[in-house]
Image (cartoon, rainbow, N blue to C red; front, side, top):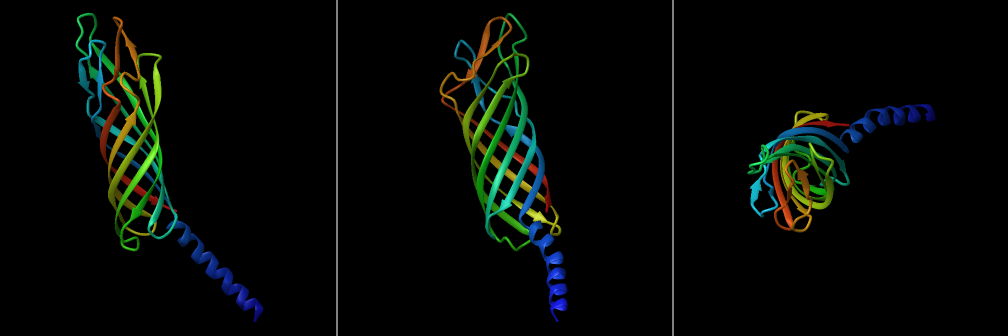
Length: 201
């Protein structure tokens, strides 16, 4: 009798644990488009950064049926064409967000699962052609929907808004001819839309 009970417990554990674990952790590489953000040169003229492709990785851990813990990294290579008589005026920038936050999932037992979330973390801005970079506090709000084909694979669509606080004139970047590029205003705003592949464990 004891042997049968032990065998049943082992079989249930082997079958149940992987399925339970699969619903608790999700990994999702994503790619999309990011736009927004303004910088200013030494004369005070403001320029909008180029909209360009973004990509990154996310991790999501289930805290309960509806609550999630989010970890996010999102990268963009962008730049601005600054007016200049002395050089081509181009300043290329890499902008990375490293965020952690929470999300609320609506209809967590459905294959289609809308969500809303908030994150905080850091924004790293680096000039590609200069030895210059800065890291600043940032926050984000995000929302979207994911569709699971089965317990392990799905797709997700995400929209994110990032706000970075640096103070007016933060992130001064030198460039050829003695110019500089800095944040235009105290806050630096960007938005992105992405599509990702969900891999659940």
